[in-house]
Length: 137
Image (tube, rainbow, N blue to C red; front, side, top):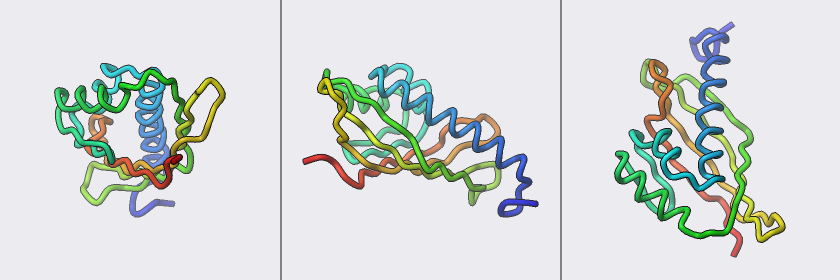
């Protein structure tokens, strides 16, 4: 059996690798650890509603801006879908995320999506587009 002409084993490996990449990023986000986020996404083309980056310096600036507020938050990832990429050697993934602000009780603050392209040779993120479907007013 294959998924879009790729063996299922390849898809399972890709799903595992991409889940690890996204989880590593989310753990950095929850700690507001700019350097850890730069390590995961510094070389990627990254786009958030609040800004974008394409190299480590602009990624550092972006994450400092995004996480400048001292209020703690937590992200959860769900509905991860991993498919072979349009370009050979890449994988595409989509996932939902929720973001809770801890004030100190958790309050749902954001619902959004991640659209990711990952390089299979290095298991690194090439592109991450973050959208926000809903943000608490």
